[in-house]
Length: 499
Image (cartoon, rainbow, N blue to C red; front, side, top):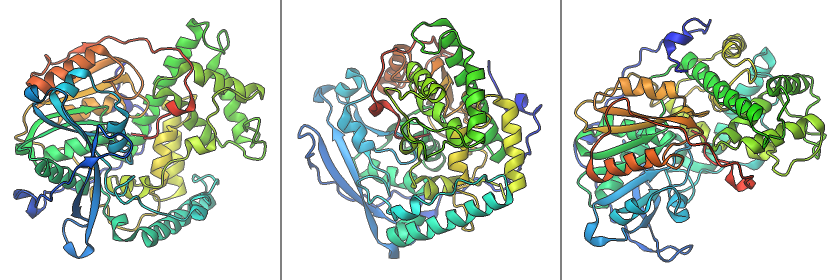
């Protein structure tokens, strides 16, 4: 089942080669950042947890833009005598809230909570760390035209520039400084302010990019890094879209196999792939909509995105119900409407500062989408990849942190983890990234969904052991799949972060 770019080479994907070298650490990276003091006080949401702020420069290269207050939350180690230190956590996104992760008391085992202060932060521009601001009227004007046509491409470029201008005007200088390299320096400032000589870190999804690039900048300041569900920052445009399309289709195929075998699937006994193809044709004709929203057609790209959100869990029963609802016109108990599949505007300044998306014309978009459809015959594209990628069309500002081969030397042992059937961060990304990081060991979870630690006791035990003892598992260790629970969840279970 494994896929690499050697496998994809047989597909006619237009390959773009970037010559940009790895970003060098700034001159100040050779010296410890000036650590501000964190003043902790009980959180208003939960007095057993500490909340605090840390001032960091808006622009790490120029102090004239002032500072931004990073919001933090800390759940202190329950066994102070056995305390190892602080575990800094990042739930990814980009745009996920580490403060909310700590407040929710989710994910981590009692062992880790006994031995570590669990510290989360809202990255700059997110949540309580001076969230970026845009006018809702501009956000709501996102074009619905096809970017693979000349008019659709022009519409998207014009919209992106209008949105960026509006958000920049409303948000100030911070809008142009939410790239991953700025966040990496924030993380090092957090480490120093916590009084930790070296960083212990758990990053999931987009949080793995922050961990990977921390290792590029500060390899000698790492105690332990767990990178769960990995980005591949050496992946260029064609690879990014193609591997995402393949991964989404593979995860969808797993859903169809479950549906064929389980009477808990509301589509049991039907050809689910053929049903999705019928829905896709209706979307192309403008005739697909939710039963209670007849004037709000679902576009083909909307439809391609819908399964991905429910494959994160994975929430297979709910996905079956959604597709059945669209097919027969009966409202489902859990409806994933347009508001649920819209992407946060934070992705534009963040993602587009970390990825150079080299699609410069409607023909380029059409060619890439055609190549993706060869890899994803039902979904056609990765709705996730295209949703974020389209935000970068027409960008004129330099990309401060473009993709590049990894340059990580001198880092201690790093633990990377990835699922086989992850719809957001393909297994191929983890394989490729791990092959470029000399000190990395990749732990494979043979299961489904996005994120591994909370899906497999095997994974959790290995991660816990590494964080506490620094002992890595043998190379090529695999954890067997654990069948997801099939209880129907509320819409609150839908992921609010993406990568």
